[in-house]
Amino acid sequence: MLNGIGAILCTLLACTGAILWWPGIREWRRSLAIDWKRKGYGFNWSLHNTVGFWMLSFILLWGISGIYFSFPEPFNATVDFFEPLNDSSTAARLGDDILFWLARLHFGRFSGLTVKAIWTLLGLAPAVLAFTGGLMWWQRVARKKPRPIERLVEQPVEAAPAPGRELPATRSFGNSTNETA
Image (cartoon, rainbow, N blue to C red; front, side, top):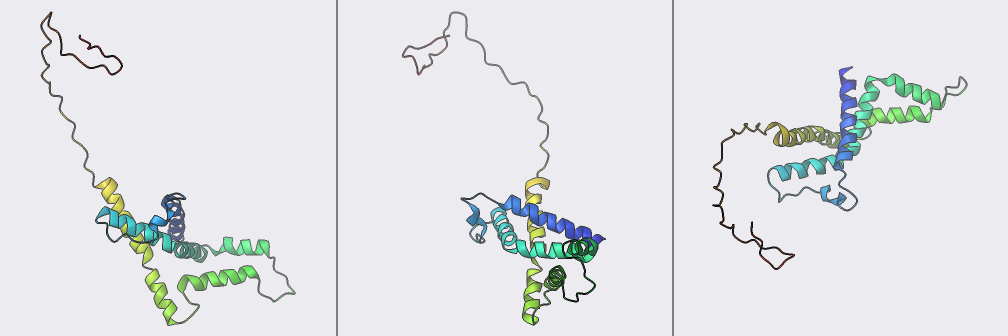
């Protein structure tokens, strides 16, 4: 049950991350590579956006397949709805093949040791995204200290000009004459 909830949250984070990542039609290329020249928050932001962009399909795959492993009934019911079982047919259904490959792709069990090693490295992406996302949150929200309430201090009031004394002339842009108070 906990793995299923985690997989649902992972899938939701991937979907909302893709929506939040989208910088617009003119700027979408900015997050395709890490900006190594930036420092601090800017580098962290660039790393998070780049890893998130390139790993989106893998994280969605792992999230959806994690949901399948935890709650297989809805997936099997969907396959049965679109491709009902026939008693006379022993041929594999397309939906069953998709679910079979979903399980193999989740663990990288479709090729040799090289693919498993690559899958292991790619599996670090959610940890990198969680760390960089948490760091960005900390820098934006949690680290800010509440501002103290400023004391109301009476400011000295400038003395008004003596009666009959004029204030300095001010310039009016729409009028060439000087105005006096």
